[in-house]
Image (cartoon, rainbow, N blue to C red; front, side, top):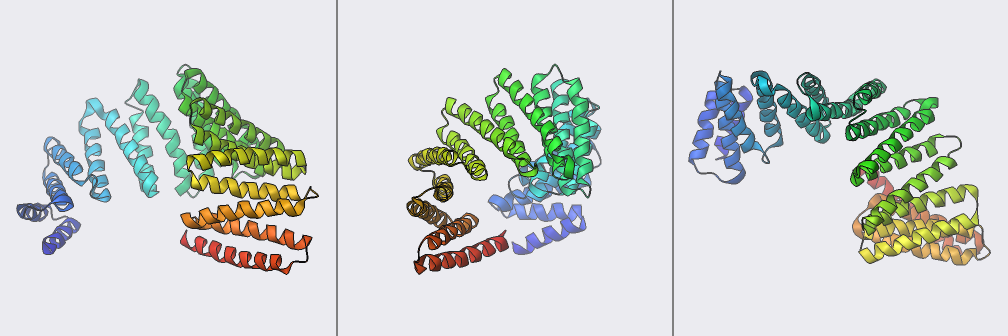
Length: 422
């Protein structure tokens, strides 16, 4: 059996199609099972396809090869599928646009797994050609995918800025055409906003202005989806909007206003999830809002705002505990630890508050340790070390300093190892 498999590989590599068909048939005669049988059937059909000269005979053999390779060998499945769709796009003139669209979508999906420039370039070429042959909903779908493809291309391009600008230009052109097709218009504005957000990361002083434009487009998309009753897409648009505000809060000189907007949008998303009775998802959004509120309160140095953030985080922490969501619970406990530490710097009862921070971080560390989340574990240990540093500064207890130093060593080792494993 191993000898036959080796011969299969050699004939395929050498493009010896007749010999590949013969060895495949010989292997099938031995009644193989499972993956081996599928490979033999796929190779035999593919070999037969390569020996034919008439498309009417080639395409059915490729279809059989695709069916056999699917779920068995990703590379062979992709190869056979691509060749089949290319042939159909050439010889099935009546459905040329659909075949090109299918090829573009298949190549895009493959790129999402491989990050291969060849896959995304093929997707773009196929979808560009498909535009010449499609109308109506199929054309809209192809053009939406095309805007997404150009954005993906930036990840493998030596000039990502050029690719983002291409997406923006294409979206502006298409938005004019799809004014009456509200669903397509909203999706185009989402892709447009994503391109602007990405462009902002490589645009220096223009970044915040680009993010403002992106925010406007995301809000418009969310409003359209709301009008259409498309709740899932409305939430997706709002999550995009929140991410844009988070980026702006980081990049702007005065980022507090953007952080406030981030909190407001997160609350909006949480409300939508609550209305749909997705309690855990609503709590996750509330946690992100609470953490942002804590960050904002720490910048402003306002005790009342820190207390508000702590209450919000503690509330969702109980939801995670009740729902059995361990990782989310750990994140909320770490956030509570940070809140207690911030609050301690404004209080007379600092030692008690720091003690609560120790408890919260300690429970979070236990959960992260059991779940194997090394990066989070290292970060939590580093944060707990700072709490012990604060305790050491408030007392003459040398044990606090020793605990801080031990935790810092452990955190450093964990984070270094986590970085190596990435």
